[in-house]
Image 1 (cartoon, rainbow, N blue to C red):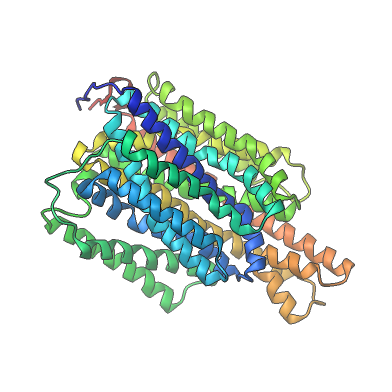
Image 2 (image 1 turned 135 degrees about the vertical axis):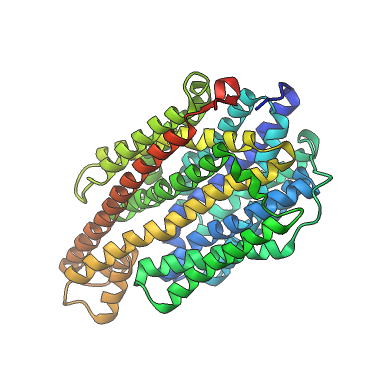
Length: 510
């Protein structure tokens, strides 16, 4: 595959800085939700199901619309779509901040997801336009990814300060300044690109792409929580059936929403699958570690953020050095080595106990995060580089769909495994002296157990807290162990399928 050798100029790097800044503040806005969840759940009286939807709906809608928005950007202009999405994201952030009940917050987060779906693929596609040289593109994507993940480091710190002084809604307002900057500077620094031969957008395909994702995710989540029943089975079958209809329709369209010919490239298809599996198996760990620090160890948000800094810092370093090392080492082996480090970290997390110190947790989480760097930075470069220029938006949508859908799927499926372990253990060990209503609340989730413990006698409350914290820890251990085994399988597949890719030559060896 021949690579155009046009070098980026100063304007391109300034444009990248704008995209990185926007991604940084948007990620701050997203990652602080993990810290804010316990506070908004109490204030809005959100049930455990509502808490899951508050967390999940953004990722579900984002995943559902990413391919659509990536393709739409190719048609109407990537910069134009990016600026429209930025404006919508800012407005939806304000709605989220001032939500008065769980339903309003869920709906606002859904709007955030749709708006976010316009930003991610447009950003990646614009980077591919600004940095057509494969080496520069790899570095640009790694800087962009580091900026995004920088929000995971800065977000909890800023969020901790905000939550200590203001109400939970303040954390949603952090993304608004970024959108203002993007709207003002984007037209000056970012190039426009539009595929003039793209044809019309097939709205029925848009409906099918969304209609296939939501029943699948909801069905699997309900099975993990409550087991098999006829409704859940029908939801999953409906989702799979709609996927079949979607694929058949794309094959008959002259201008499909998703060009399935992209998947004929082994590099692209493997990178997409690797991103999905990696984010699914490792994304849930961030939420569980955060909750462990806050709900098991009882740390306030700011201290929680400080204990998470080593992991986030190691991941940012990994993001920045991965494309440089990839010039010397084939990406398959670099990604495989990184995933081996992540597997080691997950195995360490599976050994964390309720009463152990935080060293094992911090080291395990840091290794898990560090090892994800090669996969998360090299995969987008391989995906964008494998697609023709006029399909860069669609390829960017695929890249982000795999990552965001994987993260949402991890929260739904693996998060539900953690919940199931917690509930089963609580059902066996919960004190019999508790009233029925209090017992139901405590069995639902650890936040409910902490709330109940505050309203009962000290000795009984202490016993309940000990049981609940141990049950949560075992749930986290289980998810970490399952993720480690599955991630090892993913590593072997990636090494096998991508060993022909050689980024130092900007090519593949067949």
